Image (cartoon, rainbow, N blue to C red; front, side):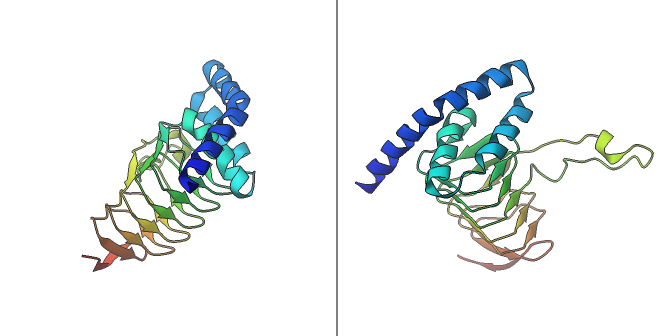
Length: 193
């Protein structure tokens, strides 16, 4: 019964968000789509509590690649890229900054987690050119099913299924399934299986 009430709430909040969603589609058609998406994300991040989460999910269901209605996107969480996939049962804690990623089913992200769009966003090989003018590339990070990422972790590589990333860790290399990683740079400290 609880799931049906939650799904009904998601439908209601999707309808409430419909004018804002339509405004987004209009603005992204006449301007830069990524900038418009990021700006809308910043605005929506300001609504607190469960109502704020429902409003965000109601918007991202129609503007992101995919956002399951039974997910939680907490206060002050910002998405910087539109290429995001959020599967069923995902919990994203407050004050997260999420780039291009696929967060699989039943993942938990603590407060202040940053998922960057890979480690190649900035090129700095030419010392005669300012770093901001050298460009870079984005890659889609995958957070595997049933993974827990602790508060303040920085993620620049994909994480396998059923893994744990300790709070404050900096993940720069892919993490295998069932691994527990910690540190800067994050290293495997134990396997869960």
